[in-house]
Each structure stands twice: as structure tokens, then as C-alpha cells.
Image: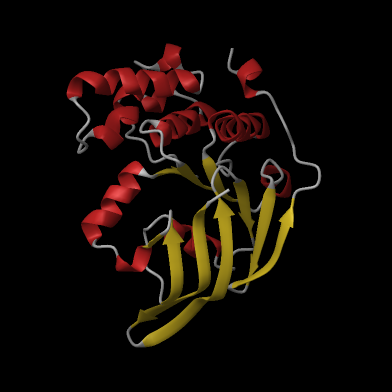
Length: 241
């Protein structure tokens, strides 16, 4: 199985007004295509910075980051933007939806500056919306939805272009336990049934155990890399009926 992500001795240091703040101190690991990985760590551990780097939102200070065999540090801005648009999908804790815009329009947003023909965009969006069980909500405004429904819209938006890699940063952080469980089951469904690679950042142990592997970050270092022994498995399709 080929690696979609491979990082070697990556370091990240932020510089503000001449003051250096090192955040990552030499992190190395690889993620095979189709794997579901959780990244855990306390606040300030560097896990969110690592996620920003993996999602091409922040450059490394030193080390090597290979994505699908390409050295990310050698790519021009337009190439990075293209990879963000086509190869990865992002799900955030805060949903980041346009509040007075319909579910359908929110989900179509990633296609706004794409070369996908306008005639195909609505069909693609409806397929993504239906895949998270919200076809009946497509015309609702996003601010008319519950928190769990809004996060499912965010997942549909992340998946509209069928990116091979999904990055989810604390996707259950603003949800009640039932809604959070459904979100995790949906992510697991796309990983198991459609082969998406999923990289999840979370501080919740139970949530992390929906993955097959857990990376633990502490003080900017990778302190453990373990396979999940009793992975939580669930059937999201039953809940989406």
C-alpha cells in the first residue's frame, strides 16, 4: 500500500517581531492510502499546527513533507492551491458555513472557482448532501439547522469533489454526544466504503478510537504511534435512513 503522506523530521518555528517560537521539533511518520488516523495531544502540543502543515495551509521550517510522492516544499502557490482544491477536503469544529445561504449553495462553494461545468455542480452537490442524509434539507438555510446537521453539511462540502484525503480538525467539538457520534460514523463510512484517507485531530479518546491508528503529540514531538486495538465500528447508514 503506497503512502499518501510522508513527513520526515519536520520542524516548525514561528517568528514574530524577532521572537522565535518553536512548535514542532522533528516529527516523522507516514500514512498509507486509505488509512484512518487520529492525531491526539493536549492544548499547545502542536497537533493543530501539524494539521495546518499537512493541509498545505502552513509551510514547514525544515524537514520533508511528501504528498503522493511530491515534495510539498517545492510546489508553487498555484500548485498548492490546486492540491487543496482537488486532493484534500477540510472539516472544522466551527462548521464555517455561510449562515443565510442554503445547504445546496454552501455545499457547491468549493466548485465556485473550479473548472467543473455549472450544469454539473448542482447534481454533484445533491449527491454529496444525500450521502450525509440531508437531501430533505437541501433548500434550508444553514442557520435553520441543528449543530449536528450543520457539521454534516460541512462534511458534504468537503466531499463534493471526492478528494482522496479528508482532514477533520475537532469535528465533534461543538456537538452533543449523539450528533458527534453520527459525524464520526459518517467519516468512518467514507473511509471504509469509499477508501478516503482520513486524518482526524481530536482530544477525545472515544472519538479517536473510530480510527485504526492513533498518533500522540506532546510538546511538539511524536511520543507514540499505536494501532487501535478495539476500534469502534458503527453503521452510519442505519442512522441516516
